[in-house]
Amino acid sequence: MNNPPEKPVHDAVATLRHDLRTPLNQIIGYSELLQEEAADAGQASTQADLGRILSASRHLLEMINAVIEPGQIQLLKELPDLKNLGAKTGTNPTLLTKTDLEIILPKIAVEESVEPTTISHDAATVLVVDDDPQNCDLLARRLVQEGYRVVQTYGGNEALAKLRSDQVIDVVLLDVLMPDRGGFEVLVEIKNDEKLRHIPVIMISALDQLESVVRCIQNGADDYLGKPFNLTFLRARLGASLDRKRLRDQEQRTYLALKQTQEQLVTELAEAETYVRTQLPKPLAGKVSTRWEFISSSSLGGDAFGYHWMDENHFCLYLLDVCGHGVGAALLSISALNTLSGQALPGVDFKNPTQVLAALNEAFSMETHNNMYFTLWYGIYHIGTGELRYASAGHPPSLLFGPEAGSEPAQLRTKNLFIGGFPGGNFVTATCTVKPGSRLYVFSDGVYEIQRPDGSMMRLSELSDFLAAQPVESATVLQDVWKMVRQQHGEDGALEDDFSIIEFRFS
Amino acid sequence: MELKIIEMDDVYTHVSLVGRLDVVGALDVDNKLSGFVVARKKNTVLELSDVSFLGSIGIRLFINIAKALGLEGKRLILANPRPMVKEVLDASGIGTHIPIESDVEQAVEKARTLTIS
Image (cartoon, rainbow over all chains, first blue to last red; front, top):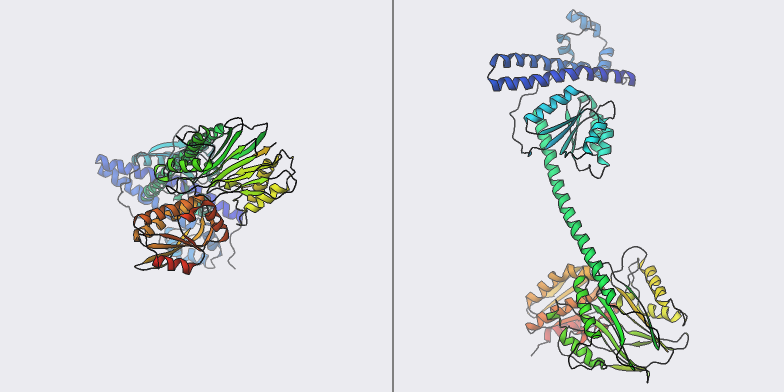
């Protein structure tokens, strides 16, 4: 039965293999470097001698690779005719010769040298991490020859410290096996670090560490390089990793630019909201007392409102809602608000809602106001008669509750087109009488056009029912409406539209 | 927001919208709808039976199309809105400028025969 080798045996063999291969790889690496330098200097005989060293070293490496492998050792142990093999070649089987190996092992293809290719890397900086200083040096010299800037570190902790310093590192070549902190552990730390995770990491490993390499790649390593280093692979993998990093860096720059723009937009919207809020009137006390709630949507919905005494008898009240969202909508809402509060429509009687709406419709046509229109509820209350003259333009009705508890509200609305949509048009006014003790609620559609988590929409009648159910003397009706709306909408997520509601109490 | 072309011939265009006509939906469909309908320069039935929500931005879209068609002597007719959408249309007062038909066949008939002097 051909059982797998036990773990201690496996580890011991792996260590032996590593210890033999490491200096040999260095001999090969340095010989290659010297051979190239000899070639550059025209020293043909030195070049030839170095070629012989290289050839012998590679051959020795092939034998180590082939023989000192845990599975292979086990196989050799269990070969029934191992003694016969020794007899056949006239050697002791524990001291196998090249001939023995050629019988046992398949031929190993010798890597052919490949002409170097030119890869543009704009003098990128490579961090080489290997606990063996000679390995580190060998790789560093190779990379410098290739035009890279190189930073060498000899352990995981030192590498992490270097990465977290001001030194700019474009790519990391990270040895898998290191005494202080293994390559895998270092890799995980790099990939868990927000500031470092974008740096590509290429694992350096011997062929018998492939399981570790796979684990590293599953945890974010970009690639791996086997020892001894193959120059072509080194160039290709570094080049590919740097290309990916360049793309990632570009994405990161684009993302940061977008984030900055977004932050600027949010700031501007917040400033616009603050400005809108400063233009809203203070709550009033007296014969007509007022309260209001204004909660802007995340993108500022274009609501604005106002009220003021025109003279000792006439109280003017209005709420408007510009279509669309954002600073543009807010600009129009403030412009319209100022027009109303400043009564800035020449020749218009502001105690006449029909005249006001018609004049606004001409002054704020969509064609001259960035293709935007607004809805409006406008009323004039006469304190002596209790008469309320009102007109709505494409706006939800206001709700007037009589002084009696539990009374059904009157919906105050007139059928007029919103402001700015089409020139001309007849705007009509309606009239009602407000009894002392009545309450009037003027609001925008953002107060009741609420989508619930299940996709259904709240209705105006639900708002009306809620208001009707509130105690007549309650001072927190508007806050309670807001709580109810938040509950209907679901706690998460901003409202899609501004929430604006005013309560007028008539004494 | 989805735009469906139901029928078109030399006399009229019949299209339908599917989804929520809020800020996102209007942005999504504005170019497609306006580009297609206005470029055809025909009386147009815009069916709203599959529109679940209509915001003010959607009304602006209707106005723009109606005005653009009006310049060519053509009309936009809104057809078969759901009750909630109908409420919004009624509240806006847009019906005085853009016909709203509850019956699609009647809307189509109107689109086939309507002329503006």
